[in-house]
Length: 104
Image (cartoon, rainbow, N blue to C red; front, side, top):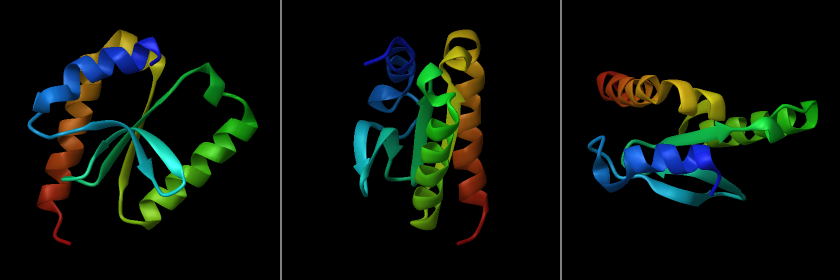
C-alpha cells in the first residue's frame, strides 16, 4: 500500500469516523481505494501516476461509472494526505452529513 493510503487508512479504519471503510474494494470492474457501503462513498487517492492525460481520462471514466450506480466519489491527492489529513477527514464527514440531509 502506498504511504498516503497507509496514512489515511490509519485514520479511517475501525470506524474511527463512525463508519466502516474497506480497503481496495471492488466496485464493478474497478477497485476503489476506500469504500463505505453504509454511505455509498468511495475515496480515491491520486499520486503522480494520475497526472498524465490518459490516467485522468481513466479516472473520469471510473468516476462516471461510480456516480451512475449511485456512489459518491471523493478524490484527494497524496500530497493532501501528507499536508492536510485533518481537512480530508472533515471533508469526508461533511459529505456524509450532506448525504444524510439530502432526501433520496
